[in-house]
Length: 595
Image 1 (tube, rainbow, N blue to C red):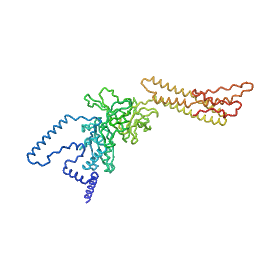
Image 2: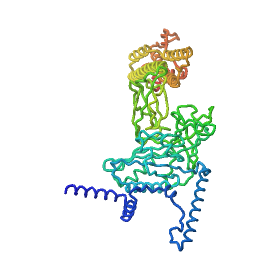
Image 3: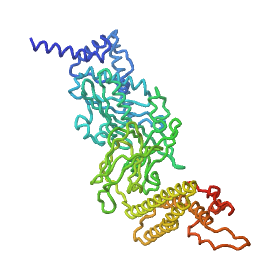
Image 4: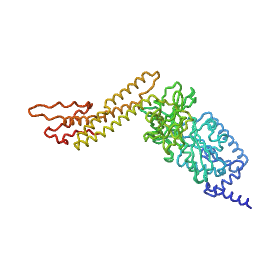
C-alpha cells in the first residue's frame, strides 16, 4: 500500500513538472503519442536548422494510384528525382557556395546540451525547454544567429565540462563559426545553467558563465540570459590611426529583432588576437596580444572606432616576417576574482609587499585593491558590473613598477608577471619624500611665527617681536633646501650615467617629485614678511636726529635674511613713521604676505 502511494505521488510530480513546459493538453497528447509510437528513437529537439534541413518538396506519392502503370511511372520519376538530387548534393559538396561578406555573415552556432540526471527532466520536458529558448532567441536576436542544436551531448559525452579542449570541439563542429557547450543541473528547487563558448576563428574557449533559474518556469529565460553572457562577437581589425583603430564586426549590418541583439555598443571591449598564416592561408599559429584591449568609442553599423588600451607602445604592429591577420574577440567581465603573481627581474624572486591599485578605464577613481604576499601573489574581487580596469603595482606608495589593463574575471593561466623593482629609484624617491617632510615642517613653523608676529605687533610688544625674529634666524635658510634638491638630482644623473646596464633612475615620477619639491620651496618658503618686521624693528631702535643736523649712532646691521627677488617691493611696504610720533606702532605695521 505504501509503495503504491509513493508510486502515485511520483507520477503526479512528473505530470505536474512536465505541465510547466506544456501549456496545452492537446500538445501534451500529441508529443506523448509521437514518442510512444517511436520508443527506440527519442524525440530530438526541433531547431530552425534541422527544420530547414528536413523540409522537402511535397510529391504525389501519398495519393492513391489509379492503376499499376501510373504507379510504376511515378516510382520511376521518383527514382530519377532522387538520383538528380544526389548528383546535385555531390556537386554542392564539390563546389561550396561562396561566403557572404563579413559584415552580413550570420553566426553559425552549434549547441550541445548535457542534462544531469538530478534535473529529472525527461526527453519531452527537455525538448520543450529548448523550444522555448529558441523562441526567445528568434524573438529578441533574430537573423544574426543561426543555431543548430545537436541531438547528442557532443564533447560532454567524453569529457567533463572543465576538461573540454578546443581541439575536441573543432573536430566535432567543422564549418561552424562558434559553439555553445551548456550543462544543466539541479540548483535547489530550480535549475542551474553553466556554459562557455568556442570560437572557431581563434580556437579559444571563453570563461565559464553561470545562470540560475530559481523556479522551473524561469528556466527558458535563464538559458537565454546564459547564451547572451557566453556569446562573444567577432571582428576583423583594420588600420590604426591617431591612437585608435577601426574594426569590422561580423554580421553588424544584419537587422536585429530587438535592441538586445545589438551586441556591439559604445563601451564594448574586444581582445586583439594575432593569427599567423601559412602560404596557403591556413592557420599556422594563434597568439593573444598580452595585456591589450580595444574599447569601442563609436559605431556605425558594422564599422566601429576603438580606443587602444595596452601596456605596449604598438600592440597592433604589422611588422612581421610571416604573414599575419589581426582579429578581435569580444570579452565581458565576470564576478570571478582576479588572480595575479609578480616576480622581480632578473632573479625572478617573489615581489612581496607591493601595493596593487585599480583604475576604471577610461576614467575613474583609483583605489587600492590588495598587497602582494610572500609569494608575490595578489587576489581581489572586482566591483560588480565593472568593466575594463587598469592595474598599477606601486613601490614606495609612489613609483609604479608596471601598468597594464585587465578585464575582471579573465584567467591568466598562472603566468607570473616580471617587474623591475627599481630599487635605486625607490631609494631616491624616499630621500625626496624625507626632504619634503622637512620642508613641510619648516612651512608650519614659519606660519606659526608669522601668526605670533602679527599678534605681538597688534599689542605693541616689540620685545616679543624681537625674540620671535631671533627664533626665525635659527631656522634653516631657504637656500639650504634648494641646494639639497640640486645635489640629489645631480647625484642621480651621475649614477644613472655611470651604470653599466641601462637603468632608469630619474623616472617620470621621480622628475615630477623634484619639480613639485622645487615649486614648494619657491612658493612657501618666503622671507619677505620676516624681512619687513626686521626692518621695522631696526627703525624703532634707531635714535632720532638731534637739532642742528647732527646724526646719531649708526644702527646695527640688518640680519642676513635672503629676500626673494620676485617680490622686492613687499619687503619695504611698511616704512617707519616720522620720528615725532614713535608711540604709534600700529601705523608702521609691515605688510604680511599670505601663507
